[in-house]
Length: 208
Image 1 (cartoon, rainbow, N blue to C red):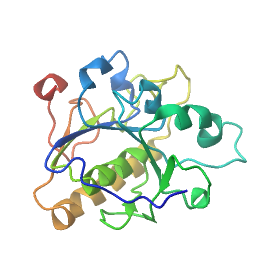
Image 2 (cartoon, rainbow, N blue to C red):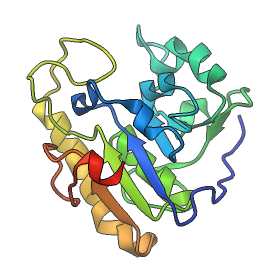
Image 3 (cartoon, one colour):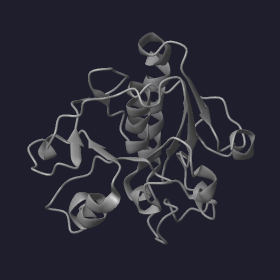
Image 4 (tube, one colour):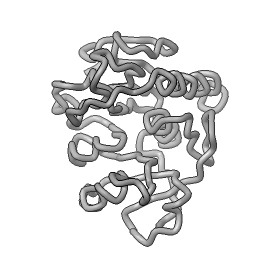
């Protein structure tokens, strides 16, 4: 697979990160058409015109429903930038799949900071691509109905609170290093009900 060679396609522009939280259940994704977007995981199903770029990290063929294996055909057909930092995928032959080195936490220019979630990793991706403002959609860090955790599937999986705590810890590492590594960049959370309180919050209609 190609080593990702970042360009500056989003230089000085706004970028919307599409997370997986249930706050996006019923969201009109057509509102994102024509905007700069990076979707995590299943967001690739929205299509290239709405989800321009895709970031995912899950690859474990020993799992019954490994993300990369299960969604291989859909990812291959997407047509946009597909990026991962999973080292197990580094030597894959697919020309459409891009790989970049991973570091555990914080923000970097020569690597993607994992920060314990694909949404947090996608923030680093957007910043490397030149984003000046990043808007978070579906970055909830909670399961308000006590049941579903994803907007894209009806499930009965309840995330353990410690997982959300780990997600929040990762975003705290982003907050701490943001203006050190990427000067003057902003991150705004477009879910006022999100449990993630470390970034300024706004309503989606304020910026869409």
